[in-house]
Length: 239
Image (cartoon, rainbow, N blue to C red; front, side, top):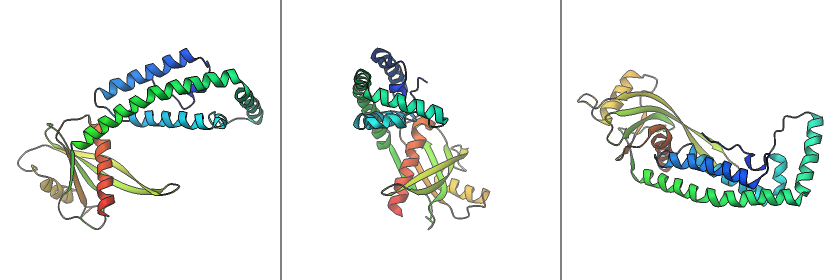
């Protein structure tokens, strides 16, 4: 993939036409993934670069934090002088600002397209609890049905809570377990739940949720990430 690292817009050569070509090649590949309804990690990557450029534009001093920090004292001193020279170089800074302004204008519609795809996929998902819901919801099973595909994918999930600067966040980790083909024995979510309990004694009374899509989507880059987000929101509301 034509990826961009965090410092791409201030790395040498600092030439607008070169950076323009670099960015457009990156966006072309992102768009090719979006056209296949492949959202991740592409959408997260776009948002990261947009925020990174916006932050730099607001505070030029962040230039100093945009380079590697594992340096010797001599290297650190040399880089400090380089930073100072770059910040004081009006021509250089104008070129960087030109690159940033152009890049933000190109990234913005790409992010909007990604968000539209996200909302489209999300609108075709339904989630429901299967069986008796236990008191402990942070660990259990996620059943995933993907459009016209026969069968149900089963993941074990675990939700963790971590604190940010101003609020708590929930994250979810999933581990693929197996797939149940659609036939008379395991034709329902309830029968799958029952078999999971019989086969896996470590969770005798698990929380089980099924996320179903009425359209078939790519699993790893699209359906599973959105199913995990739906699960987190659903459990947060229920808690």
